Image (cartoon, rainbow, N blue to C red; front, side, top):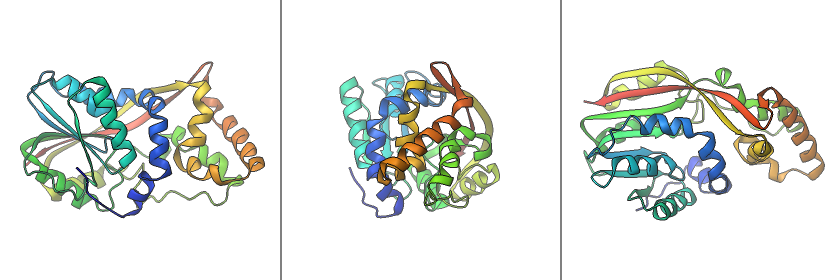
Length: 279
């Protein structure tokens, strides 16, 4: 099942970035495992539910949810990225889990009306061009009384690990794009008032927004690969000359030193856990 879209997010996630996320699937799965567990544990085991996982990426959370639901449930992952959806389908088949996947822009895709009793997302809903429209569309896909539970990042100032690479590299890479605080992106839902303003017009009620902090880790041996392949720096670094690249890598690696503890890199992920109900 596919749905075409030609916006900038589609171009990004179907291009180099999407393929890199597939290649770094294992690293990202380990890094974000605590957030996956938070969502999965909120769904009753063996529940005869119908769950939609928005921005499912390579399917880690979708597969974990489908496994928790068991054969009585139904779990569908949706993502704009063709390479990531292909990887998600391969994962589900490899692990023998009956999850299904849709390659689509969840903000405009014509889901079956009232098809789901739960809508979840692990860091996948901050990239809509029109968030009000997108959540209204997800509401149409949800039955009356359905639950919404999504995890989004709080502000950049509360998540310094996430911007360390670009801050350190900026003096050496002037073309590094600045983040748009008012546009789609990682920290688009940092303001809880904005989250309420997005959800309420589309038919989501009883909005509850709670702070959540959890320690995330990755092996120190993977740190350089992490910051040279992912994020804003990862998008530009392949196109710079080798000498500049070496200077950037040395500078950025030093900037991460406060997070390095022996063989492990540790940081605190500061998020909002957003809950609501379809009315």
